[in-house]
Image (cartoon, rainbow, N blue to C red; front, side, top):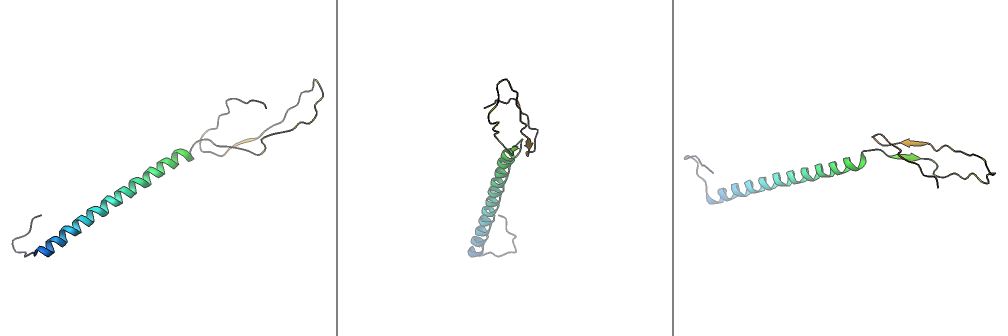
Length: 94
């Protein structure tokens, strides 16, 4: 630290200046730490919230008694509630 020749500083004022500088550095480090933590949490939630998500109103259907040699069908509506394309690659009957 450079002091002008005309200034007169006591040891006490010099110690106070050093203490204020240390506190200012600590606040900056704390602020950067909190900012880093915030960005990390934001990135984590961005990865987990994004992508495709599906919603199905009914997940099962009971046809009851079906006569032999009879073909039955039912439509299950699938809605994409996510932010990316939902791809149904295979369907397995229960």
